[in-house]
Image (cartoon, rainbow, N blue to C red; front, side, top):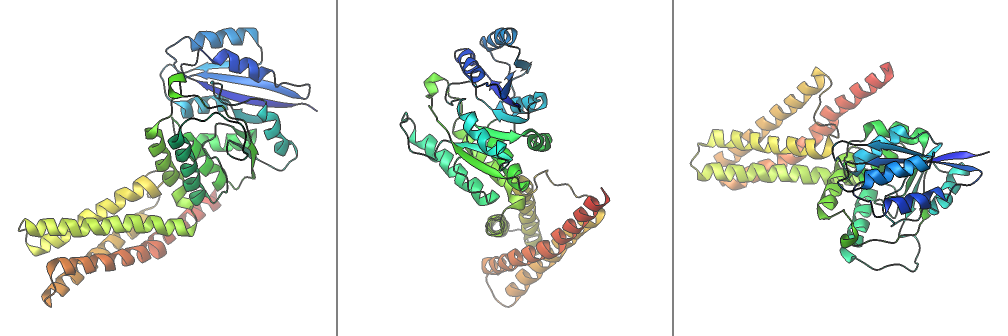
Length: 373
C-alpha cells in the first residue's frame, strides 16, 4: 500500500539552491511512497520564482504558490499547509542544510502507528559536522529548554525545520497559526503539546550554512521566539511556570505601584490622589503584561459576568491598597514603607482573587460554551 508525503518548501531568495534541493527531494520517492512538493515563493526578489516555475513544468509532483508581498516563513508554511493533500505533511527549507533522505527515518514512527508528530533533531547523535556559530547553537538549545518548560515536552530541538505531521493533525493546528516569521517553530510546538499528540524525535543530518551563504535567522528572531514561547505556552504551562510568570507580572506591577507613588510624592502630589494614581498605574501595567503574555488571543471577556468580576477585583484591591497605605501612614510608618507593604499585600491578594474568583468564573463559562457547542 503506497502513502503520499507532502513537503512544504517555503522559499525566499533561494535561486542558488532551490533547484538542487527540490531535485534531491524528488529522489526520495519509492514505489510505496508518493511525493507532493508544494513550493511557496514568498515574493522573492531574485530568480527563485522563475526556477520554481521551471521545476513545476518539468515535474508533475510539484505545486507552486506565490505571495505578492513578502510575509515570512510562517506565512509561507500556512499557505503550503492549505495546498497539501498527502497523508503526511512535512517541511523542507529551500537551502541545502537538511537531508531529505531523513524523511524515510521520520516516517517510520508514523507508519508504525506510534506517532502523530515527529521532530527531526539536529542534536540527538554525535556525528561529523560542520562547525559554525556557538551563539546560534546556544540560542537554539536555550529556546528549546524554555519551550520544554512551558509545554512539558522533553524534546531536544524545538527550532528544527524538519517537523512531520499527520495531515489531520496539521489541519487541526493550521487555522490557529498566526506567526509570520520564525516564531512559527515555538508556536506550532505549543499547539502540538496542547493537543496531547504523540510526539517522537528522530536524529537527522544537518549541514549549516553561514550568513554569507544566505542564512536569514538572527538575534531578533530569537527574541521573538522567546516571546512566542511565553505567549502561546503560558496559558497551559505547568504550575511551576505559571507561578513564575505570575511572580514576574505581579512583582513588576507591585514595583510600578511603589515607583509611581514615590514619584508622585516627590512631585508634591497630595497623598490621596498619589495612592490612587499609583495603584491605577500598577493595575494598568499588570493588565498590559497579562495581554502580552498570558492572554493568547488578547484580552477578550466573553461574558459581562467575567468583566464585572475583574472590575470588582480591581475595586477591592484598590480599596485595600488605599486602606493599608493610609492606615500605616496614620500610625507613623514612613510613606514609602507604607506603600511597599501595601504593594506586597496587594500582590498576594490579587493572585488569590484572580485565581479563585476571576479565572474560576472564566473557566466555568468557557466549559459551559464548550458543552453547548
